[in-house]
Length: 352
View 1: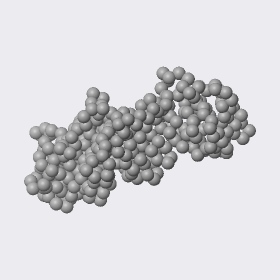
View 2: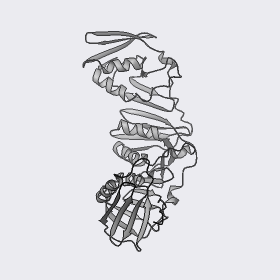
View 3: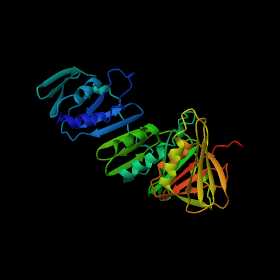
């Protein structure tokens, strides 16, 4: 294999977190085969195209990956001297190093049985959908189905949804396919980090989903279980108020300055006419700020929230104005704009 060192180092870095576990002896590193770099940690597999033209195959150990990152710029040549030795050349540098057997590397056995419809979508939109959903994935492994992101395509829409029991976010994009699956949060984060350009084809079978574009292919296991019926969870509020997203977010950020990681003090929101007041009292501070609303709720209302949860929901909606829906101090708040909707559960306030 001959390739520019900078290109190879950059592509290897993309796979640093998907190498096989140490329990698989002699398999540590990244596989080069079929002119692709392949990483597989037995939960997630990523193939990255290199643009080379060779029928060689070999395993690149972690130490060699580190060494390649330190080589000077220019062309690098890597070849297998035999099944257990690699030779690396770059300018005046020659390095011979031991490696594992590439034929022992974990492979992705793509089972097409039960494969459903596929969907092709723009990579930027896919990344946006995932970013919007990641903050509301659950960390509670007792319900693993909610530790990931739902992709459900039906009735002309692709629905991308996450829910951790306190927050729920739902984004809709047009789709003419019909499928439903949940990918782990780690796989979703990997897709975001790879930043696909152009079109991405999404497909799945009973056990795995595949996200493929010209640059790479990601294979991920699916999570099993019954995902929350998100369409029934969202209340249909007849009375919503519109607020400037940036003004709301800035006021919320200022209020949060006095909340530390140990504090569980809820933030109070008071809707009164065409105004919204933020109030937070902690051991070190009492903070109050009022901003304007474009309209008013039918009745004045005070409601409490975990400020971080509200902040996460708001900052992931990219809009000049958002619509807030709420009916009582014990009902969830909805935050909506265009094709993105978020829901945040309130916190019970003390009588004081």
